[in-house]
Length: 178
Image 1 (cartoon, helix red, strand yellow):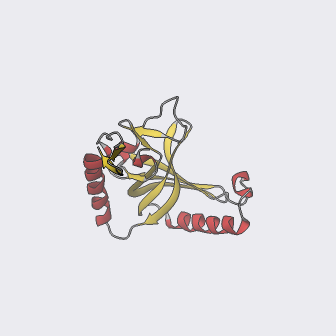
Image 2 (image 1 turned 120 degrees about the horizontal axis):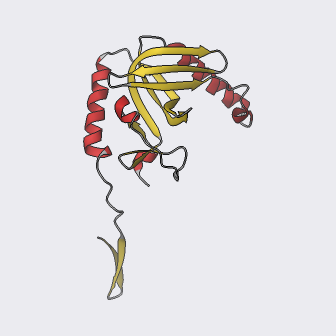
Image 3 (image 1 turned 90 degrees about the vertical axis):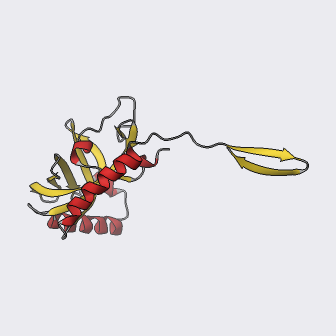
């Protein structure tokens, strides 16, 4: 399994917006240059905010290369998805989501991590974690991280797994990596 599939991949908006989905693939799986991506992290200025109480907060992050739609779900108490979970866990998740929604205001620099989803044909981030950054230098650091990771990790084709071969000789056995 490709490690990019299960980790939060740091992406700039232009990379996020270029993610593709194949008709035969898992609906929660997207691809960046043939590498699977399901979770992302981005950072930028909140340029739009639409709050529907007890339902969701929809907002847009602009990092200078494009705009990424994001959504924080706030319907923990009336969603059938959460009905089957432990009520005390749902209360904690609802409190966390509400606190994050209160922090996300127009003009703040926000770091967002979440799942890549599609709504009405448009890519968006379903937020798992949102943090307001106080240091404006974090935006430049995020850009540098994205460029470095793209060059050294994301654009690199994975090599096939190395096979282990057992060698038996004169009553002893050992493993040799090829």
